[in-house]
Image (cartoon, rainbow, N blue to C red; front, side):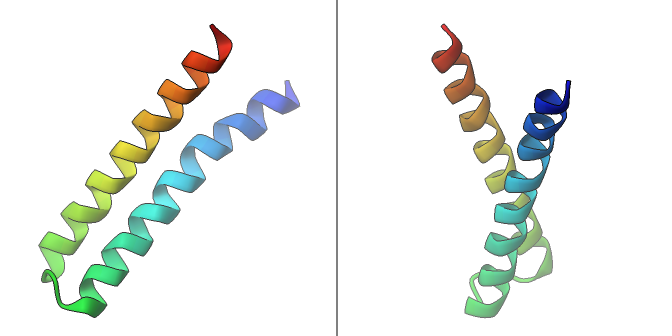
Length: 61
């Protein structure tokens, strides 16, 4: 049960962390304003989450 709880945190923490980093870097670099940086962060988090699920699914097969 504890392993499941740790795995669940991994699916929450890493996509959010990378999304925040991408949004912050795009704000610093001047690539986008507030909304564009937020959208790029959300898209990054969604892509990372999808890739993590695909990797776990393929590893369990």
